[in-house]
Length: 394
Picture (cartoon, rainbow, N blue to C red):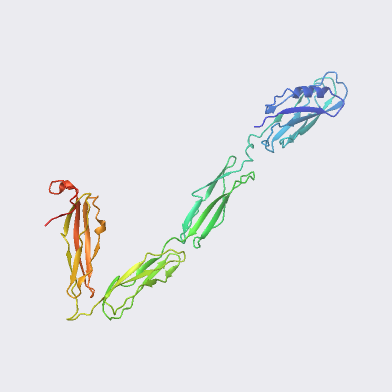
């Protein structure tokens, strides 16, 4: 509540007796008073019938504009004349006291006979209930201020709430829409106002709609096909569907030469309109020689160099001895080893190395070696020196 800083009185007539009394009483009102009253008494020497016009000025001394308009302040003058009880009292009031503005209330005091005329001025600052009406509501966003939404997914907005110090919870208005079927950035704006017309600071939410899901490829037919040399091959292809784009056209890379015995790989790929690439799918087509008495249908023979089962001390160095392959028709055939680089002697465990060889007729043979990395003390119960790297068992 703002304090009444001063109450002063002035007169428009030549008579100054009542005016002097008003000034004297007004000066006694404390600057920090919020409700004030005082009495004015005319001296006994005032005999003539005159009208003494007393003006009471009420000034809010606050330096800021914290005093709220529509403060009801009233000043009433009540005449109590013993000699003539039929004299009616007079009153006047002022309202809307604001910073740096003086409000004037004027009431007439009629002196008929010698006696005491009492005038009471009540100055009340009623801004307690309206002190905060100039403060706007505060909007609180429910959920995140930025939302990422997958295109094609339904969007339900979490909304916002608004609280006002006077009105309590107030309604929030949402402006803007989100079209989840169309990629883009959408802004939702939340606004609110209280009963005093004070508008809250608007709050926004950004919703980004984007297609981040890749299509799915489905292979038509088997993933592995075998056919004889010179046969006709027609690829069955593959299909792809996307949540946003629907059915897509699949791209196939690779060829199959049925005139040449061998293994061929066809790869199927696709991407949607948002550049989301599907996981590629492959098909293996094996072209084999036509069966007959002179057709080579026997694969090469692989011989592992060293033992097929090897124990290696932990932290020792392992060098694979490899393998060789020979074919009854083609002679020596190249051998491919897989898994040899996966042997980790720092970790105890079993590792498998696979050797494969394919002859000119497309016949493939495989062989494996097991490498066991074990703690040094577990090998025949003795610790092995660092210089011993491989122990073969017969």
